[in-house]
Amino acid sequence: MKKFIMKWAAPVMCGLFILLLFKFILFFGYVPSSSMEPAIKAGSFITGHRIIVDINRGDVLVFKHGNIVVVKRVAAVEGDMIYINQTGTVLSVNEAIPSADKILEVPEGCYFMLGDNVEESLDSRSWEDPYIKREMIIAKLW
Image 1 (spheres, one colour):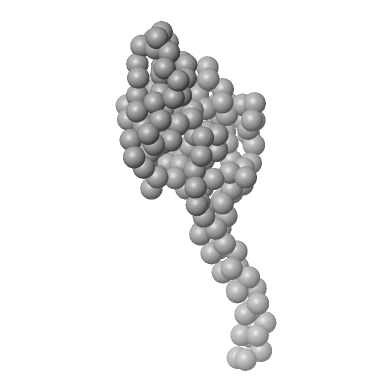
Image 2 (cartoon, one colour):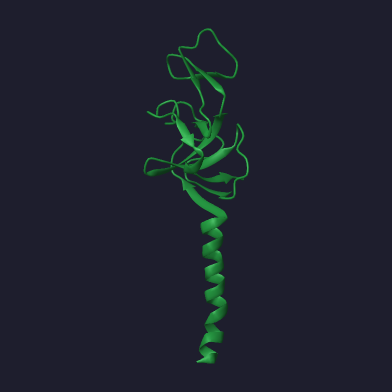
């Protein structure tokens, strides 16, 4: 019995370590769409980390939106003002523009997310609730 335990202890411990590593620290995923092109090509594999200390404009995050996992870039953080025109194009963040048809302020603990491929991306501009809460975030890409 001791021989059996010694034979399987190392592989089981390695497997458990890898499982915990990916569950709590690392993120590995796949991007099926072109919404983040040219930064992330459709069909790309991505890696990130789950331990997120701070989130800034320009960071690429993986988060849950409804029942799906999504990858988008942070366009605005809490307190930012977003100026959007009639076609849904974000014109500016924190710089007033008279031609803006819609002005949004990002609430506390929330983020406004955009895909890099503006024409193809379903993002904060098209969602009923345009903000992603901090607790919905899964990982931050490297």
